[in-house]
Length: 381
Image (cartoon, rainbow, N blue to C red; front, side):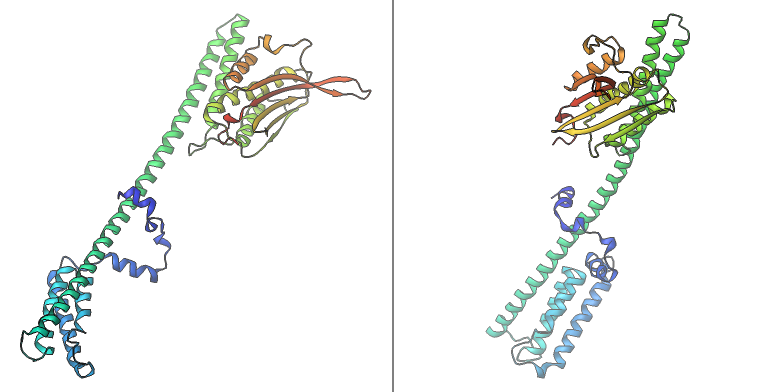
């Protein structure tokens, strides 16, 4: 199993050891260090010998308390401890020393190495038990070593992933910043070029192009968060509308915004929608409210049966009589129509019809409606 796969499946990978109580953490740290002092073999074998001597002494002192037939009873812990603390080789040494001590001191006839049928059976039983003990301890320590190595690998991978995420975020921010700067710089160059033109139509065309590039630059900067995720529409619409209103500089014109929270558009839809919104607000300022010192623009974004409805309304003079959206030659409206077709959305521009005091219809402003299909949302319902 690779480190990445282990990180996904092992409960050890998700455990936060930094928050573990120090008293509970100590046994884990101790087990991770086994076998102990591998660089000092003489110390390991010396302690193993002391464990064997201690086991022999305890067996000797308790000899009268044990019934006949238990010569190895105190020697098994010495073998297990030696294997557990210092590895299989000290465990094998302890098993051999304990075997000869028990054989010589506690298997009748004592103080000799008699070899009869009962002694062979007893020695075979002892050898089988210690082999199983040493093998199990060794396998446990190998598994523990692999687990510790996997934990270290996961830790390194997590650190590398964190560093990579930070670099990616910085690069993304730098890319967005440079794209926005470049677009706004191109708009500034066009504005400078416009100053050298005398023909009104050319000046107006270049001025419109420069203004739209400036808007696209602002959109590019505001569209994404620092982590690369798209900004929700409620925040983005407020920021973009506020910038357009501030740049217009008409204090008597207010902009009211009603946006349903949690709506996020797909990346391929966010920029076109932002451009259409910008064009609608600019048209309301330059045409619907051109002759007024005071007025209100209302921007609304909400879900309607799964679709996303964007509306921009003003309380200005409304559209001229006989206005036909498909025949309109305004660059802004033509751009909005083209972008709405690309989005497979329904785009409409109409007068808001209300009722006056005597019950007759009257024009009370203009409404732009953009109805986006559900597939344009980042989280379509």
